[in-house]
Length: 73
Ligand SMILES: [Zn+2]
Image 1: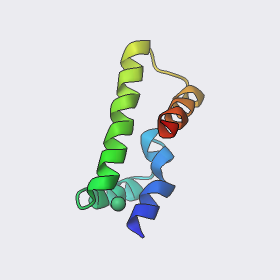
Image 2 (image 1 turned 135 degrees about the vertical axis):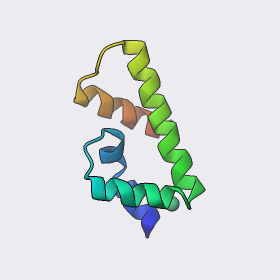
Image 3 (image 1 turned 180 degrees about the vertical axis):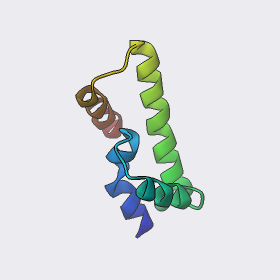
């Protein structure tokens, strides 16, 4: 149930377009679910690495296409 909630709001969380309420609920779940936590941590690490490489703030469309790529791998 909660894993589904995390998955449902995953893109919003990564792109930081998420409600505080949803984010709190997700992080609460992450503290108990290792699988979701690994998934989110990987995506966040990947995103910040890309941002470092680009040295500028990426346009939102680019970030979400990077996320989609990272999910395929
Ligand atoms: Zn989970």
